[in-house]
Amino acid sequence: MRRGRIELPKVERRRRGQWSRVALVVGSAALTFALARIQILARDEYALIAKENRVRPIVVPAPRGTIYDRHGQVVAENTVGYRVLLMPAPMDSMLAQLARLRPILGLTDREIALAIARYRREPHLPMQVTANASPGGVARLQERRFLFPGVLIHQYPRRHYPAGEAVAHLAGYVAEISSAELELPEFAGYRQGRWIGKAGLERAYERVLGGEPGVRYLEVDALGRILRWLPEESGLPPIPGRDITLYLDLDLQRYVAEIFPKGMRGAFVALDPQTGGVLALYSTPSFDPNLFVGGIDPEIWEQLNNDPGKPLLDRATGAAQPPGSTFKLATAAVAMDLGVLKPNDVMPIPCTGGMRYERRYARCWYGRGHGSQNLIGAIKHSCNVYFYQVGIRIGLKRFLEMGSRIGIGGPTGIDLPGEIASTFPTSTDDWQRRFGYRPYDNEIMSLAIGQGMVTLSPIRLAQLYVAVARPDGRAPVPRLAQLETPPPIGLDLRIPPEGIAAFRKGLRRVLGPGGTAHLSRLPGWDFMGKTGTAQNPHGPDHAWFVGLGGPVGKAPEIVAVMMLEHGEHGYAASGYVANAVNFFLSRKYGLPFERYPTPRERLKHDLPVDWAWLFSEVEDPPEAQP
Image (cartoon, rainbow, N blue to C red; front, side, top):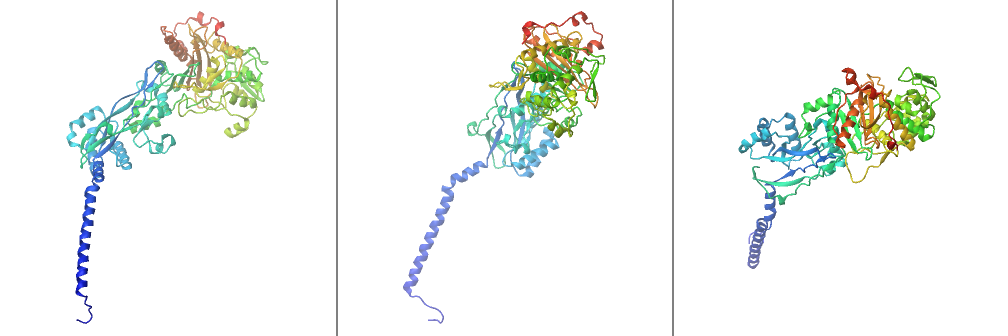
């Protein structure tokens, strides 16, 4: 035996050798089982992973709902558009393909930058190169398809507005959702790349019109080359958006856009007094909403934003001006509600061209004066001195409180985004908060005639006169879309029927001899109205006219408001409103339509005028009295 080493017995050595052989066999069996698990038991799992690497989801946009006018004419519809998609691949390969696609599709730097940014946010989805491919670009790409095995040309429902600029502000437009919008609660569940309503009805009824996008699957090989579409049942079909029918009369809308004086800024609104439905809503300068479909050109976008005429501004709902003399009926309504005015009241101070109150002398627009008159005569002549005294009877504090109570201040609640609130302080404290000083008592003189610290939008003024057109003195919230539930009452003048009757008599006489709009008198219809001239410290005054019309012996069936920035005098707008009312009523009753010259056209071109008819007395049809 050698030193330092312990020898085991022979039997023990044999036993240990046997255990080693057993361990080797068991280890080999375990390794074989593991390999079998990988190769057999996990076969389906690895096959699924391989399949997923060969399948690409393609989001299928939902067709947006069609928007119709009251007669079934299309306001917004879908046509065929083309988008170009690029299957996911290493970024170097994607950039190389973009460079080759650029001249074929006419891609801009902005389009390429947006495509790359979008792909980096969602690299598992195909890159949308453009959603605005022209038919010519698609044809050129089709000819070279063999050079682009990973490119997909996909048809999608593209928005179209047949009336173009005429409906821009009411219809709105669609564009791709932004990163900021994705964070808003109203767009919960939306994903990058989806097209949404950005303005107008498209935005207001996005959840109704938008529908829900679907998905289809595309099979590609390991190099990203497109092999085939998988069966439709493997994906989810898009859910189309729902259609909307409007109160809008598209023919009237187009007619208003056609006759609106060229080069002037302003707005036109027409409402149905029965329902509060919007028959027309037009703002100018305007823009073509079709420019936004598929992505607007950056240069055009910059032009629209920097245009001093502000074509993107909806002057019908999103801008407010002092209403001038059109506001005098609101003053009279507050006075009658408080019991300080009756229709036959003659003010103690006759109009001699102006009057003094609380160390202030305020003029009437007619320097020679209107003399003594009742409410009907004051409306006819638009006499400032009469309404100064009506305002004084009310008092500034009560006028501010009552004005907000009948609904003059605040927005109307029309179903369009971006409506601006009217300016009308609710109290003297509110006045001080808004304008930085405590109002003087004589401020009531300006407010009473629609000047000073009061502004109204055209839609708010139209709603005010809808209350005059209805026998109950109330007006619904204006609405564009015809919904199942009628709109609630949004304004209540709170005056008795005899007050409404006096208002209408005065408004009829505005179009009669000596009235402020006698050159816009309309034959064949019971047409009445009110002029307004809003003082403008920055240039020529703004012109307002409100017209109410219907068949003789019936209540008014249309209330129309026109505002002309720098129009100088209300009569400048009266002829356009008269023609629009005549157009609507003539078509409604199947009568031939004849356009009448506006007052300025009559005077400028010395057109023949039936002076005997124009200066004949206006009669009040007994049946038309509320």
